[in-house]
Length: 436
Ligand code: NAD
Image (cartoon, rainbow, N blue to C red; front, top):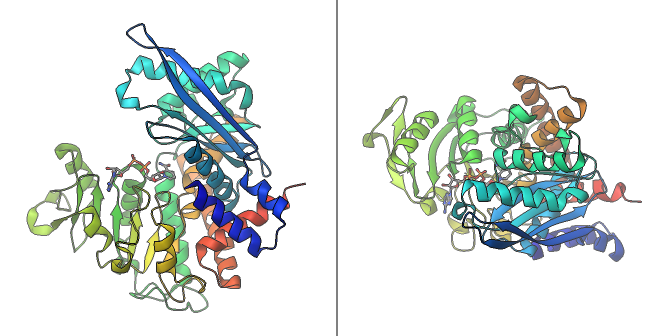
């Protein structure tokens, strides 16, 4: 992951004719903090956990990025994610650099009190290197608003004053933003809608758009399959369905369902909560019945004949084994890195202009940047001490996502590059132009 992030930055920077020292500045993290955290377990015994906070680049503003708790986390992964946060924040037009944190732990194996002690120990260790204008952490894999509330409480205790803008993803009662929970899915939908305005939204999205955009059949005719029914996948599916798209398939780790005529997202979630899985939930309107659909595996879901495919679960799910079988014309990368580099190149027909040939792939650094964008809005609210309504937050998110998309689209059309390369080029231009 680190190698491919660095390779993409290097390739883009070389194409932009940046010198080798500038490329080094884009690749190397500014700071990499590594530490051992010792906490007392419920048994009274001490246990040591390894952790990192990597601060990649601060040209555009304070470092910004989540903290993950995962038993497989390694330094290279945290560094790669910090690097990609620098790109993502620049793509989204945010005044932030990139950072990331991680602890090697399986949080399911800790009691709640142990989890709180570990979270507080982490906040204690990073307290002197973070701050609202220095580095602003947030939740990531396995870290929740409650964990953020422990961390900010510990941090504020150490500095002796309130500083709500130093962590984002907090509970609303502690200065979190309304709309943050749905933000990633909502932001992805705004980007998809902006893309559809640019192209013919008919069955073949590869047709060159006419001036004025939208001229195809109505959105109701567009089918979507969503892999992953967690925070990102569920809200994407729910909001897309409310916007008039036809969600025909969704899945979770145990498999998925295909309802050709379009499924009810809320009813499917209700059924999933009862059964513990999406498989078996063939729901239309308020009724779930086998006659409406069929079960699909996660592999089959990716290969369904849909207009839009939304991988919103794991990385590398579209790879050399299944890339030739992907039928969707548009892929919206809501998960981080759902396509391998090989699959990406194969599907986007490298080098051709966005939207002319190959699939249109909306890159993760743009598609899922709604989450960090509302984190930014939470930071602004925390700094100002003035909090917006949910509608105000959502309206601002829409404006920011559309602006981010527009810049990437423009670059893609001008340079005849697919959206991903265009996004990296826009990001690198913005970062380097802010470097002294
Ligand atoms: P989540 O834990 O809420 O949901 C993940 C979903 O994926 C669950 O439905 C789970 O059952 C499903 N899943 C797990 N293994 C699977 C498998 N093998 N096949 C199919 N589905 C499987 O996580 P999330 O917050 O929705 O994040 C999903 C992705 O989006 C991740 O790549 C994450 O890094 C990325 N992302 C999330 C946010 C955010 O704000 N939550 C922001 C940016 C990017």
